[in-house]
Image (cartoon, rainbow, N blue to C red; front, side, top):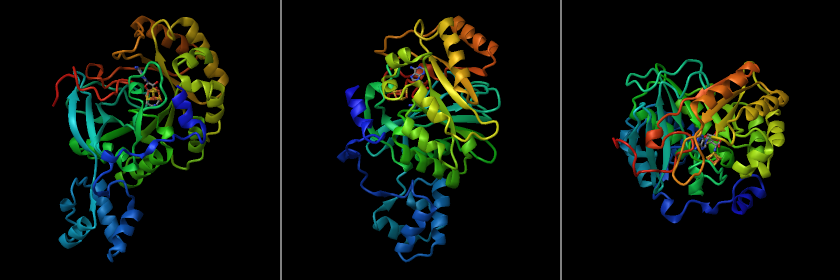
Length: 395
Ligand code: SAH
Ligand code: SF4
């Protein structure tokens, strides 16, 4: 915990032990993937080429989803060779392991810079209504839409007591190319045609996006401008990192926001989320109020239900008061706690989840229950810990 506060105390952003990567994580080649069109044009004009070649390269990387330079057939072979000789390569993260759940969810270990990070594919969306406007249908092979859950860091420093990712600690920040690359690798694997298939992104994988703010937002811009996914189809979740929320509030183009509230009051929140000591519920809500919400835009409050700890009717009453007094366009997303080895909480009963939802709905608060996806393969919320043992059906 002290460790965590030290990491975010100074500027609100993390200080990593030794730069962004360990020696083994530094790629041998310079990565083109992650550079935007202007930067790609710059690389090529430095080599004496015309600037429009940058656009062709961007299209190859982000639209055609090439994995190697020799697949960039819009550039002459000599130009590709020259890029390679100058030390460049595509360098997109690569799916090296995959696990498929009985519900159709797939969890991937994505290799980048000598380490792996996790990305989850949820066909038919991750649930009805909460981050999109159609009901989900579960794991049918023939998906019409899907949600990709993306990681922003390897591990996490925030140390929420109920989360398996926290057990890893923070290993390192991901670069913009490593964040956007997870999405492109998964789109490529499923041969997704973005003009035909609906894809939503949730930045709810490993890590705290707002403790890797610049890289996270740079990835968002690549995904919007180059890959072609609208910001309105993206949701970022934060544990309540106030400096990040304040920066986010000033962005012109931004994904939707979810706040991991997870508790009915500061006392319980502090016990399960040490970050609450630095920024309590009131501070987080104050920051969220700085966001210029668009018409119909809402903030989502995520609420992990821990059996006996946060799932009782009196907790629901407190949540109702809290949400009302927040005076924000908001909805609530209930998440039954997903178990993990070494974490001593209980999942709530389905009756207590239903009763909780009923109370909130009766109070006029839009409330969804997130259907757990991929629990059997450690792909559900808070279960991402690069688990390889016991995971079902390696593909
Ligand atoms: N770090 C960010 C985003 C990733 S976590 C954040 O915390 O918001 C995504 C969501 O999963 C968060 O709302 C978090 O509270 C929830 N979560 C974490 N561990 C969980 C678990 N074991 N069961 C259910 N939800 C969990
Ligand atoms: Fe980090 Fe989110 Fe897990 Fe908390 S819930 S430890 S912020 S990944």
